[in-house]
Length: 114
Length: 114
Image (cartoon, rainbow over all chains, first blue to last red; front, side, top):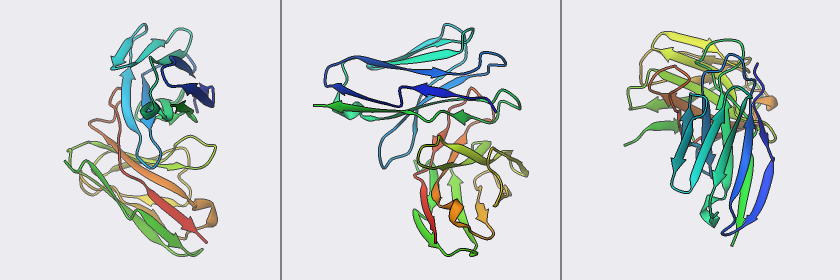
């Protein structure tokens, strides 16, 4: 099973701060990299699905980059707001096996203080 | 739009009891899957299906059975519940069973096995 790792485990920032966190994955046999946003008491919601090296995706104040050669993706949040508080998950298919399975990292829990 | 519907939202079982967690989607998605979420762990894949009549095991399949008789439904069965199966369960679907399709999650089922 491929190891998808996220850092940091948790993060506290002040409203208005910009922040970023990392998802690491083995670079061989890459298919795709997913980012999800998971608010407390809700279900995970997809932010981005990235497939090409050098991909950059943006949704409002949130953006993501992908480096498949070195096996990492960054998620950036510009001007954090309290409503951005959530756990951010990344996922990728396993190193061995088909692309129909997604292995999730343990997430980065972001808290934005007003 | 209903999306992915899971029932029940909460369930308490005694060790050895059986039950079925229901999952239905109305988006004509080919791919459906079950995950469990435990403290300190990422979402872990239990079973998945790439279409009606086709199922396969994920990372943690032991103690669970699934079937996919229709495109819409993907029930998860616990034949003899154990305390180790206390967890939050999420059903998720995507348009096709390929890595570049985002997952849509249900609202989750919180299961306690005493």
